[in-house]
Image (spheres, rainbow, N blue to C red):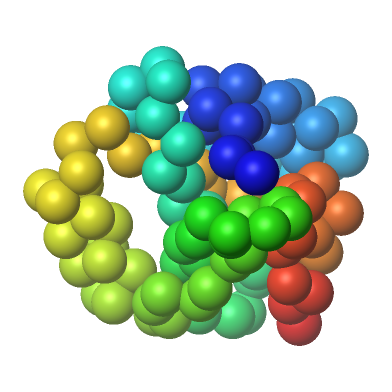
Length: 108
């Protein structure tokens, strides 16, 4: 199963999170057919965490935590952007982003 293009997923996430009272912003805008996606999750009083969508052989894409902390997240985003200029990244500030993202793990 292939992941939906990030150009469809990201605007839908922005609308859903904003509608639920959270904050969402696009950090990196890649190719319209690209599926690579990073999510930076922020919550007050907690360090930001970067998550990377990883394709799965069967079923929905999986997510893995790739970085934690301001400097680490910034460095990770920059490395990924240099490696894949077509990558998309979105920042979310809302509790339990898993309710908006298929396969996203629960976060505390």
